[in-house]
Image (cartoon, rainbow, N blue to C red; front, side):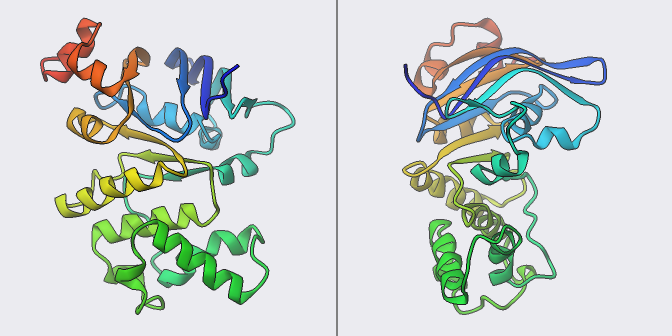
Length: 254
């Protein structure tokens, strides 16, 4: 039996009485970039946040069905949500480094809070490793004790990616990570994704079909809370089976 990085089984999500995710069955292979695309308000971010139990921070949210991470249901009674969030990192739409912490401490904060590093030497190595993984080390190695305000938007987002990587997750969730980054920053982040998928499974949310086409191995099209079509990116873009998918890709979906 093949093990997937993420698998959902009849996943339904409600906000109050409103059903926003409607019985989704999805399998995301390991070490791939899987893009969830669809128009604004279709449920992409809600679905993404169910993959690391961040959705539970919304008191109105209710979840039915299963979300399996490497074969284990993360909503089981014996599962600690904190351990899930360490294993499944998250990068949000707006670059959100901690403004009052230095670049170094932005990376170190999660490690300190979780007591994952025992010595200053080990911390230095982990901070450097995370910044190198995020392709940012060479740009900031001489100003680690400056503050994030000195960085460009794209650099801030890569700092946030480094912060997530420092905890050594197995999966990285990215909610429109380039939506508020300039074209140069976007190009750098997309290039970084190809490097990261060697070691991580990446789930990317975007409302831009062009970004899905450029970056992903697999794509799922979400519309009004339903998974309309899913498959290898090449086939979805060249031969969509569903009329809604075709309309979305051609910009004619109202």
